[in-house]
Image 1 (cartoon, one colour):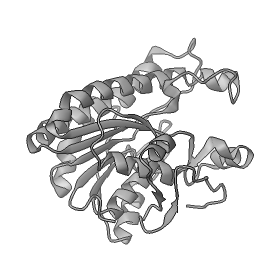
Image 2 (cartoon, rainbow, N blue to C red):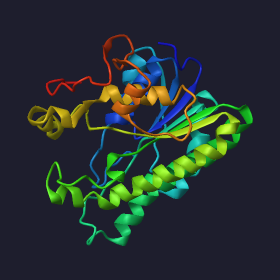
Image 3 (cartoon, helix red, strand yellow):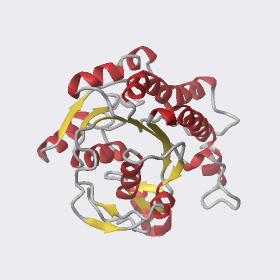
Image 4 (tube, rainbow, N blue to C red):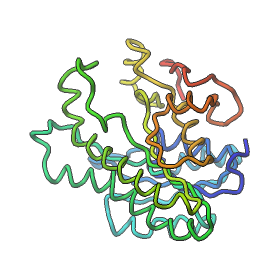
Length: 283
């Protein structure tokens, strides 16, 4: 449980879900973690508690701090890396997990919606990378992981779900496809400087706390869902190893590198890349 000992990480979208889980595991592995998220959801409701995520890590004797930021605001994100580094020092790792989705038919997706998604899902990760890269390259060490999505490719025909479900993810998927391509090019540019940049997408829908609709899917079609621990294990591997420009999918990547999956506190071996999600899990 010391794979990230002495390193400093920034994880965006860390108030809940995949981002929170990654932050908890990285802290368990010894990293000092700065967690970031917007305080408000798309419709003004609280989208999760950044403070609660930090408290979970602190209660487990980890190092964590909160740095709220609306990544859709170019001015606010322009200084996020600088603000994050005021907590524990220079960043060794950035996980760009935060994302925005607007489900709409591609014939109806508005310019405003598309611009907003591309700004949060593409421009924000690129901006944060550009803020951190000069120092990482100067030190000859760093990791940047951009969280992508299987929706970057059109679902195969016949659709596993409904045609509507396949169509309304088009604009969101296009933003993730753009993120994959930019990440790949950036990764090859800086690989010689000791900075390793990759994207990681879930192979299946990720089971996280509070996602009741995912539990329903898991009960009906277990193969469509994966445990969040699988996604987190792959993220840890990509943020500690020497991988260049991978457009990785969680289960396939874990299988390819023959890596086991551990609990979020790093203490218990759960299985391997074929680990099933438990729809009855409460945390």
